[in-house]
Amino acid sequence: MPERVLEIQALAPLLWRDGRPFAATEGNETAAQSLPLPLPSTVAGFVRTQVGRGQGLSFDDPQALQNLHGLQVCAPLLVRGGQFVLPAPRDAVVYKKGESLQVMRLQPKALEAGCGCDLPEGMLPLEVTEDIKPETGYNFWTADDLTRWLLGQEVVPQKIGGLPEETRIHVGINPATGKASEGVLYSVTYKALESLEEGQYHPWSIRARVRLPEGQEPEPLGYFGGESRPVRLKAYPNAKLSEYWFDCPAAIKEAFTRLKAGDRVRMVLATPALFGGGWRPGWLDKFGQMNLPAGVGTVPLKLVAAAVGRREPVSGWSLRERKPRPVRWMVPAGSVYFFQIEEGDPSRLLESWLRPVSDHEQDRKDGFGLALWGV
Image (tube, rainbow, N blue to C red; front, top):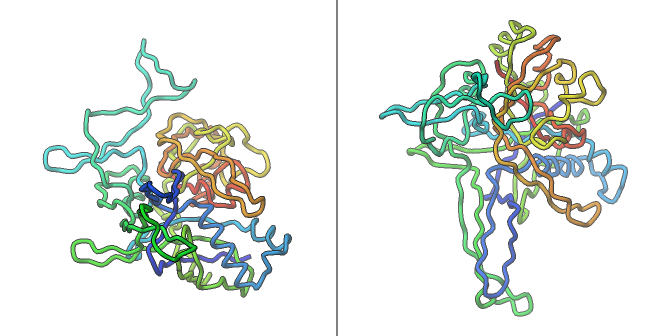
């Protein structure tokens, strides 16, 4: 099936609830917070729903549901003013030195004689060259800045904190009387997919990449995230796929052709990943086996170091089983893995450029663990 790029355009501020308990009960003031971006599985579920509606499928048909559940969705990718922005890599620390902005590059460093650490066997610590205070607000980088960083070049990124927030105060409504319930007050923090910065308007959107049957179009209008907020889903023509997706830059492709066994590469997660080993990819010990992520299953790699953020939960409600899903722990987006190439053709790793590298096949179909590669 040909691939298409789909764009989610919000018609109202959106909500992607985090895992904190929320209940508007009498006498309590509660707050519903939104995640910075929707989980890959949230976007995948929405896209599959719109594809099913566009095909006129019955959601009571188990076979139709199974087919939709197997549809691979690579998402979410955030777009700001027509330019891709991605989670900041965790091997970069933005700080101020005097009045100028600097970026410290964290790299693996061999321990000196007589020194030790509590890292797993064979892992190296990351070197911090200065005692600094990191600057806040650099949560996302533009695709151009990230490309230069992955090539090993010096970068001073734009300050992009993420989607603007909008907090609204609500009151509980008594369903019997239709009036406000006394003492039931709560707030909801939404994400607005538009911003006004220094007098300039920036529309935001979310893009996904998916294989669609020839001639099939997803339903263009739908409801996304918490509270079923309205959105528009735009499908771009497959003939112009590279115009609407962040394909691997030519400079990175060229750099990988010069690599050989013994050289090192970096893998940066553009979306949260789910690994059988917690923070450590399970496929590291399974080279050559079937059903491994594209590229990484054919090039033996040795894990040298990692810059991994605090684990994040993923759960939710299973409509199929009508019960809560068990909590699992994700490696956050922006986490960086440093590998040494053992053998093989390093350029084959780029087969997984913005493709999922999570351990389990269904997690990859849901878009967990989209990978970026650098030298």
